[in-house]
Picture (cartoon, rainbow, N blue to C red):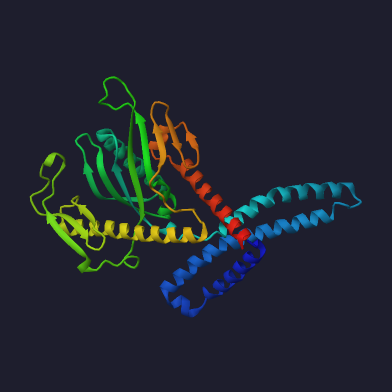
Length: 362
């Protein structure tokens, strides 16, 4: 990447957009003005960092020119300024490179999160409940909102499956790293001999699809309605409010019975279906791009074990980046920032490496 050339191009684009913000035609069109303002804000972050970088480069050049000054005090001051500038430049260069990375358009989206109990029976279902509460608390810390879309509870308060939506600022950019298999190691409450059991659940984080992302034609779905029932077969209500939506071209099936209104259950089921279809579309596209460019960042592989929660050792280990924290309780209370920030940093580093490899190949 030619950093200087790229930044100067961004700066010129920023100045053009800045002028456009005062254009009468743009001001008269709210949608166009909003898009222009967002672009102005995005480019502005790059321009501010570029100007700081340029200023530091100039300061280093000025200080270097004064190193041979006959005045010893002036020369000493120049050396100190040069050292300070040279120490700051690598950090500024990395910050600039990160800002110039191609943005993932999905990062701005809300999400639909699906948690399913895997191996481990009731213990896995209880852990699914623990993770749901962890994400709910994390969402609260981030100022996001949770909407329950579907839940299949067990007698002991766990979940065989729970699906919920998360809305807020750049939700997908932070939640996407949770997709995969989560493993728990602990002594179940029902274990009389105190033996540690290992259970697993799967998490899928889907970018929430809007109507413009995925079109579902009426003739492509079959909607069945039936009477809702709770765990153990007990009746929840006496009306046919539960909804099962089948997407005929793919065979995908989504059920929802949380609401007493058939209309609301249908809307929630379609929301989940649309997000599943959109996610499948995104994954196909990324696999094609990956094969074409050897770019493996953000492929969203959900097949492998990503994290282990070890209760006896109060330990959380993220296997993708080799991060181990001995603060399991705080993590389950929604204090996930250290893990998520480390995963974001790892993703950014791999993207920078991929750009460097592409440049060498060219």
